[in-house]
Length: 493
Image 1: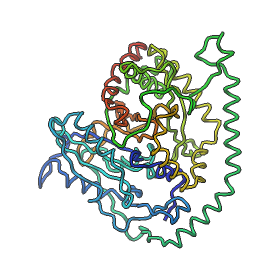
Image 2: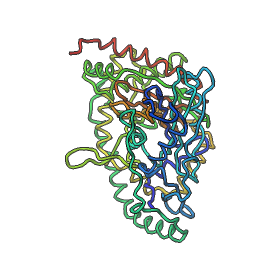
Image 3: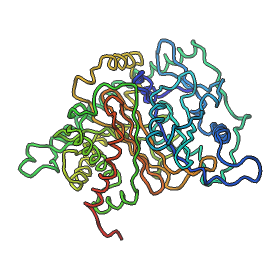
Image 4: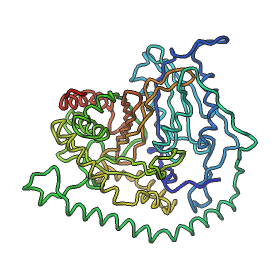
């Protein structure tokens, strides 16, 4: 039995029928790489894939654990091993309608993403999708954010893949040393919750002090810094700032969300992203932010809905501690994230201006984020009252208030480092890997980016009522990338 951290439980409390809090992956596969067998049936098959997944589930302990709520919600729920675990309740088969192109695949992924996970079972599902154009197939998976964050999700995903089409031997779980939880009684849950809650009381006052110190440090920094985007005459009146939540322009991306999702995909060259970064003296993340700004600018102009102010984006930040040698340890399960708020300068007309602004404002956002204890958000989630937080989340969603006030954020953007080497699932080569995060009330768009081999794959998750044509937004990625390449064309040594 293991209690969820406050941050893990936070994603449970946020969940409503219109706001499922799982993350989604669409992995497009090429079965032509499957080695010819020496005997038995040849080719790709659902039983083959399901058997491979079943053989590896024990490598991801969170996939065999289910939630047990604490009576009266005295504290966060606990994870326990599911005594009735059955892989057939998690791995399914589907086929796309003809012609099986990107639109049909996106439509299927949107249907899967629209349905909340069943909390009576371990919080994940996988769908083997057949009928893609040219004989391709796809694996569509979703995992609740309470179990894994983005970094952990990428690491754990690799457990189900191989480094070559021939696969590898998987050691079965050691049943002699494997611990299996017994279902806790209500008395045990209440006693455990009460002891943990009393311990947490002593953490509140120091947490308030650290948070106030961080806010004051940001305020002092903004009061003293010059705005790198302003002229010398304006710098006396315009302090530098990163993105500020609750101070955002109103856009068509924002408002109360429906339960239906729309999904779209895009891909750009990682070599081109890196070349633009080198030419501009910018990081890969800066280029990605500028690419998102250019893409959103095109989309908003198309709808005659471009605000005069820059947009505010929330970017998750990995806050896992590092080892003494500076290396980041294996992520494992759970959430170890904070949030950085930066500006997307959609108001700037040229790609060069947008990238220059992205570098400066992202730098300011990193500096401001560093002024806070990196675990501040996690600590506040730890002491949050489950009943109050869930009630507030439900009431806010039901009230429709998200359409009646300025948005807290305009968009969420995640940039995940993916594997730089090809992966294979049951012998089929992973061609593309589109990650998609969840959306929340008031923020109808999540853009998640992941590098894979020599490409950058981009997944768009949108509320269907706010962005019914999100595929047009995805189509704007290629011209926005071309603008960046043209602006920083250089002989790359």
